[in-house]
Length: 456
Image (cartoon, rainbow, N blue to C red; front, side, top):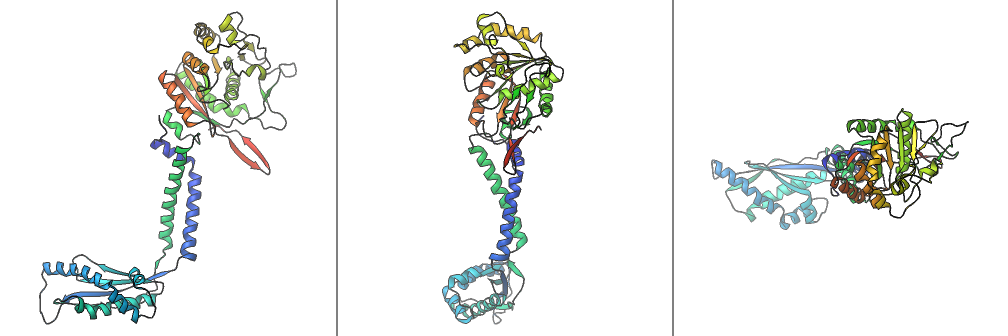
């Protein structure tokens, strides 16, 4: 996939930014109304109608060919009307003085197909001036035609111009219509252009091009979370608590994601999956913990595995021993180190002590055997890994587990990184169960900026 938007993505993007489009339309409409009523000068139009006919002395009957010839002559007459000689004479007789070019801009010769009539239409800020100029032009042209063009035809004025108070410009309703159309086009173009040029994800529209299932839209705020230790007073460790100055996120709010994810797991007959992202720092561990707790609260026997050896954190968050764990088992065998979270059906497998050759450890033949054995004892196994594009660890792990949930962060995930990650997943035919979009929304209440949690 390249940086382009499909039609579906464009429609979705426009829907996401609909309020900005509406706001732009409102601004354009207000500008159109202000321009039409307060800035633009009202214009009025007046027309004198003329007839091209044979001179009375010639007593000619017009044939169709002659009628077509006369119609073509009107084009010649138009050139004569716009000549400097005629316009100079007009300027000398009308009450308002204009330059010849200004008169040309005001005058329009209107013709009809296969007709001997034509009109001299003049537009001006004054209805009286428009009628005066139209009548003056027709009179001078009628009297001076033979000086420029000799024929057996003559010009007759069949309807003199009269002042009209009907305003021809600006027309407010028409200007509003054009403002709405222009605002819609401009705002849509700018939104699409910014989406294409932006290095980071701005919304879920572009994600539709990956053909991934949207599991949900969350706001993983950077809260300072802590986990209670298992005590007699608080037997359920592993449940999130907020510090007094922070706003907590209820586990109930992640039910939508959990439900869709469980459907995908059942559909694909999958127990084990990897939670990752295109880049680091997106909140993968936070998401993994929420999902693990939610699944465990639903009666599932859940194992949460810390597979991010370069930056392990689950042992610190859950206050667990990290003397043995996943990587020590893969390296040396022995005890695995799975630790139960008291009061729940959640279990955690820490990463274990750090080793230098992480990538080599993950290629161990022990890992597939371990996965098969773990699936016999747990309903769901979540692996919290490093970013796919950061180090090879996550890519190796993905090829082993082959089922993945992607976390995409608004204004944090780069489009190029996501494209690169998708190419890797497609090349190894790794199943993406779905993606979770972290679109953190900020609200202001007085001087405080708060974060709130939202699930589609």
